[in-house]
Length: 303
Ligand code: 13P
Image 1 (cartoon, protein in one colour):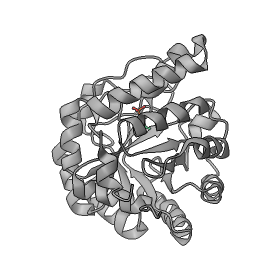
Image 2: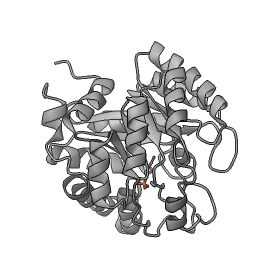
Image 3: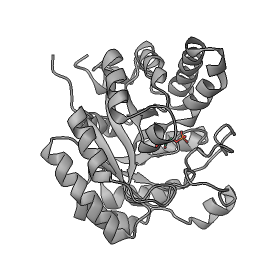
């Protein structure tokens, strides 16, 4: 049986007015309950790992996540995606992003992200274009980021309401148009009020603020770029904003904190208990927060 490519699936999500959730894997035993919940809810979703999850958490390497994924994958319900590989990381250090991303392509990842968002626009364009050329030659789509989706850095964030009201770091629609035209990127991660869950030791167990989204701003980016857009920081965004964002161009939503924290809170009782906690959290995200139950039928009628 032949299944749709990841690029086709994201396009179908846009057309069908649904979204593809992308679940982060900071701990390898999370793979099994994530896949099981997607199957049990008949939802489609991606399993993703970001560089910081093998450097600062326990997913070990992008190859280790691939190996675990291979044990449980279900082509009608899941795909494997490489999340944030930054050019400059959250500690301001330069990363061998070309090395990491080419390893992911060789390992069988079905789409990749390069994150040049800490760079000036022209450099972000140059780094993204380099990865687009490499990934497209291998036949896989690329996600990039423009604007500042904060939260991964050490230290306290500015107060959320101040950040939202000022629009500081929001993706600029004119820059986004140029970025997409000059890079040929497939999907764009945008900053419109969303923030990542904190990962510093002091803050990673804390509850996230209930973020809002500037939907008019999103709409401007959607109209100027015309490509599927991605929402990072998917945990804790107020539901009415999530549902509205899907009507205005968001085709993929990344979720990490909502399933990581239950794992960390229960791992003291052993891996099966932590996996059960992840499974329960997944059901809430799929059924209540994102409403992607049964999306596998719409996105993958080949099922
Ligand atoms: P949350 O931790 O807010 O769910 O964000 C996840 C994310 O965007 C990973 O790239």
